Image 1 (cartoon, rainbow, N blue to C red):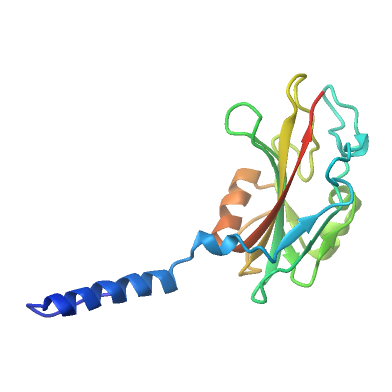
Image 2 (spheres, rainbow, N blue to C red):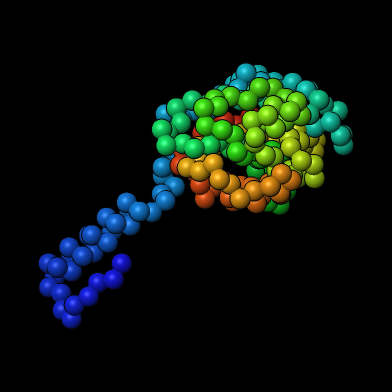
Length: 196
């Protein structure tokens, strides 16, 4: 916005500042919009107080699980949602954390993913795409923390304002997350823990 004129009265200056502040609030992509209390996520596999099954654990390294992605449901997404994305991230892993799953391009109208959606072909049928996780495999890679203090795993469902994502299957999860955040209008989270 360009303001012209050689002199502005103090009243005019205050009005201009207020208008600019108002315009910035209206036109900015506010992150506060992502904290929508009506938008919630749940999981039959990750219910509070429930120990996660071995079927969700990674299937290599020291963990011999089934590497099945968890069932996830969501509701209350904003009316202007155009697609969904889901991530699972471990903030307690050394360094920058650990990406276990990132999937985008889930069509609007979808309100859940079944157990094992990653490996079963359900996501491909939906037209969704999955990132390369930090286990260096495409799709879901379950928890397998080192022995010791349990790690937290944050499941986030994002409501996006676009279905046109500039992402390809196998793109690193960190790049998925960056693209997802630029289009997020609301998000919902649940956290589970697992330790060995």
